[in-house]
Length: 282
Picture 1 (spheres, rainbow, N blue to C red):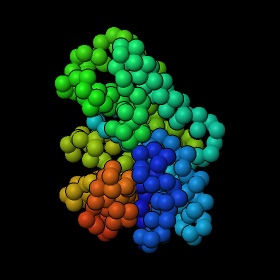
Picture 2 (cartoon, rainbow, N blue to C red):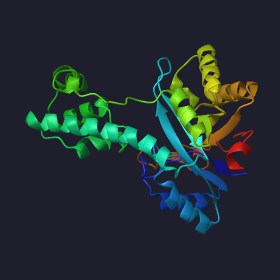
Picture 3 (cartoon, one colour):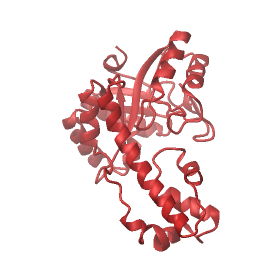
């Protein structure tokens, strides 16, 4: 079975439209795939329409970011959830709206200080998703307003008036993300475990914690994980009888070079050993 359950479109930080991605999936000969844009399902319906035309099986998905006190970067994939539910849309939209409000206030304050910077200047460093302070620092450096990125914090971002501009909602915790996915009928899968940057003992403890919230799977096979990492994650997933998935995390050649739909980086996911996948693909 040719399968890839992790890819992005222009609905978040991918280079290609949902329609274009589906056509590429067809060219690659995949049978089943998922669109998993960051914090949004706004591209799913367009992809579904094209998938139906192409005779392909599309799994509706989303990739949520979560904030954890121990793990560095936690992303959780949600599959087959009720993505058209207005309550679900309101949840992810409230977080994107809150980020946009904070970022627009930053731009306004910079302009008031005579610093000519626009949201478009900042967006190109964030690939149009999850704009944070580091992206502002990069834009300021490019414009010549600072000597290095550290100066963005000491001179501006960690000083008033910027210091008082807060995100009202913050990021969801892993518990909140997993419970949200479950609440809307979806299956929660931990994306690319390597980004947690935890040693094996701590990683296992963290996965046990996530399982207690309702996590059902791990993306053991991923383009940017080493062979050794993938084997380690597979072993952990098997010990808890979790769903084992595979994902290229395709964005396009300018975002993540050398990563291809269905095959990953240098064909490193073509032999992925998926398991218990029926819960996702039906």
